[in-house]
Image (cartoon, rainbow, N blue to C red; front, side, top):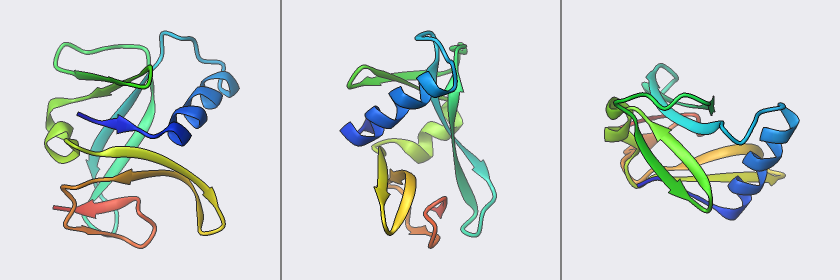
Length: 108
């Protein structure tokens, strides 16, 4: 399962409106190779649910994850911070053995 904090939900809902997306758009979370720690998170809107996608729902937000990425993301919580120490989405990933300073890449 992938969960969403209340702050992340608020920001995702406001981004849907700002970007002119419809309620048909879901959140797609995936993992790509790259970054200073080897793997990077990718987050975006997607209206298409692919046959191999795993679909999770938390707090009314549908989250799509491909099977390959699911291995790295299981148990992850998506959070949003707007504080002085950084602004943006943060992944709290229990599978990551190391993360980079900016929090955008990780290794297992």
